[in-house]
Image (cartoon, rainbow, N blue to C red):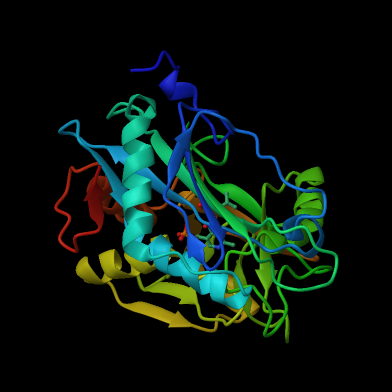
Length: 336
Ligand code: PLP
Ligand code: COI
């Protein structure tokens, strides 16, 4: 095991033993190479630097109660990477090869997977980008896919303590018929100004509305939106401009397994006044409860100082599956 203060981990870049790299040229992907190098050598004219062909993914590996290390749904991330690739005219990467590459790089960094009981995990970050030097606006001819890993703890300070959110009224992160539904690096660049302004006012998280009408809730800059109604239903946004979250998809299944009614539908902003519990969900944030949401002059205050009871039940079930404490009845975990 590495000498790391596992309990103090936040969500920061940490180099580990290796990352795995694949190069695409002449219409095919190379074999993967493990390297300890964290730098890349590309032309200043590389497509990614000018025209932004860059997509990424995020998933986690967990050290279970039995000591074994397992990745949560890497096949789902492999499929989503390909959906992002298609939209940005980038080459797809075979899903089975992707899952094998993830297992390989996790195994090579197994001593960086936080011990069971520390609440940490190994974050897996694949990134694909166009490397061909070119100045005409065209899809790159060559690409690099790098999968790096790093030990992480909670994304927002305080673990699963509620965070306050601000609705972005001045900026959208996505466009109608744009790239909001894929994991394009540019979506995050587009969210940075709202995020900066919100943080200056002590709101760690930004909630975006649908870019066409601004009447419905889309998602947070880092995660999907979910709410629990006063009668215990799980509600989440349906929109063409949000990322299909693997965590949200899994939670919808877990909620249904727990006997809850689940609804994926457009959520009008005004409905924020009616919910009992609200949260952000995603790989990095897991389930992060939201204490209050500010929308211009209006404040929706849920009054929680701790995670609410329904969100807690979902959190315990989900993390219980991920750490091998509860049955993985949907076969989501892949052993490394
Ligand atoms: N929405 C956005 C904008 C994200 O960046 C993420 C994180 O990946 C999510 C949603 C959650 O997706 P997932 O649960 O697959 O991590
Ligand atoms: C993830 O949850 O994996 C993400 O990619 C979110 C990121 C913006 C931190």
